[in-house]
Image 1 (cartoon, rainbow, N blue to C red):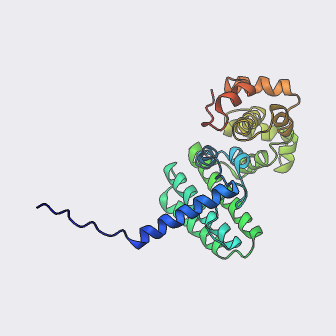
Image 2 (spheres, rainbow, N blue to C red):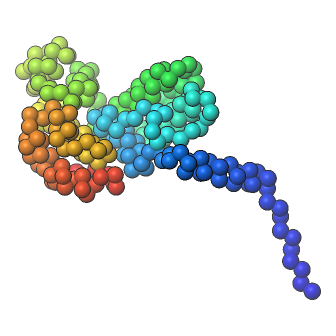
Image 3 (tube, rainbow, N blue to C red):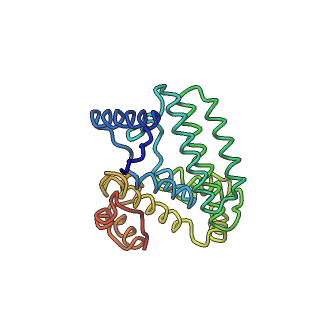
Length: 261
């Protein structure tokens, strides 16, 4: 007579995990909780890896808001856990993008230690933003294949911080204590294009991300980024991307990644 071999009893650990998962899913259904869209999250980390500071600032979301899960019942500890996860992901995206592993891990260690010593949500937010910007700036230089001068770094940071305004060469010159003609020549020499063209490209890049990952209308985006008119915004957008803002949103809204022309 053939006897069935005894089946091993299911581990209490697995039973506990299944029970906890079922309870967790039930709670999320009852509260209507949804995690942040995967596409937006990946786009954010990809923008860090590509060194696109303007895109990073467009997609940056403070920790603990809508779409963030509960990793600890303690509110401050919950934010710390989310920040450590973000640091770990950004570190690995940047290594994949060309940053030396030792440099990336050292930065990671510094920011995780700072996270551990935070005593308020404000401190957590400060570390989160500083960490994100630091990694992005490092990747900007790595991807450019050259080191920018200190003055040029200051100019690029100014543009990134004031992208929602109308930026004039005189504003930039004053910000870095240079004359407008000198800065104009310096910028074209280092960046390979006029200041105005660079600013337009960065504004359109930010607009594309806002069309893809937010519900703002094209008119709102045009006004927010300081374009002189919506028609001018549409003209520049189509020239750079190859689609009108309406066509771009229809094709890429929360579905994939920005695919410039």
